[in-house]
Amino acid sequence: MMPTLPGVKHLAKGLTVLLASLSLANPVTAGALPPRSDSKSCGNGNEADSPRRIGFLLPRAFDIIDIFGPLEVFQALSRKTHLDMFLLARTLEPVKTEPASASMNQFNSSFYPTFNPTHTFADNPPLDVLVIPGGAAARSPDLGPEIEYIKKVFPSLKYFITICTGAGIAAQSGVLDGHRATTNKAAWNTMTPMGPKVKWVSPARWVEDGKVWSSSGVTAGIDLAFEFVRQKYENGSAIVESVSGSIEHTVITDWRDDPWAAKFNVPVTN
Image (cartoon, rainbow, N blue to C red; front, side):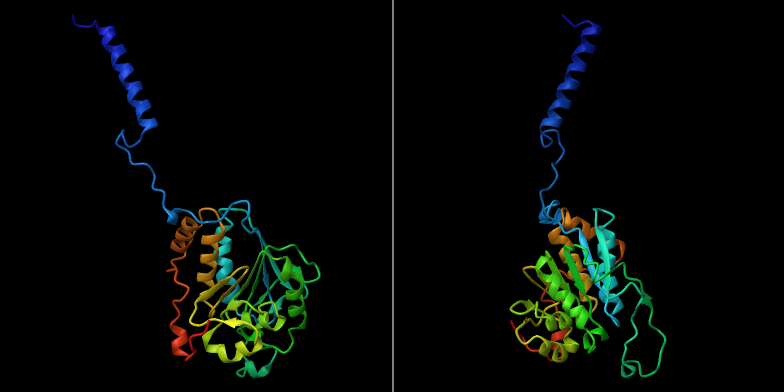
């Protein structure tokens, strides 16, 4: 006996509900693949432990990209998770990027912007990360306040990052002693004597040694920042892919990818 029309409607409705429940319970059975569990889709960082308070040291004559390369990456990150920025200098007066020594500006150029700090060393805001830039600043004989500040805050930091010849400034403070670190290969012979107890590494685009991270010359700091984000923040790999795409930067992910060591005849060390 054929079911009546209302019976057919009830039967069809029941089959629809059954298929929907099977789809929710087992997406493969329903013909939909489950999301891939892929390490590239997320970083190793724990959201609760990720560093939030990031400071940038601003000595006179710092290299602009040493600061603003990594800052670009962290600013993009701040649109995806909460971060606080601290630009630190001796005073709140604008910091000059022009070298103090006339011999380092022999053509008397005026092509040196200034930048406004947000805090002074005396303010001593609590930090999770401190970034040290290089540039002409690393060769300055007047780094006493910067070196003392680095010594003071280093023990309380979660992470300490040097960019380019910023490693030379950090080395003068002694905080890199016993740590593996790298620096700009074009300035290798000038910077490495500043830290005779540092385990200088070459070739290296960047080096990670516990809480101490260091990069080679200038733009290597951008790749260091991306690797730091990848490791220390939840969904870090996805964030790196998104941000690097938006700024059209091809990220170098191999820390040993350093052609400049050979170019400047820097031997293999550590």
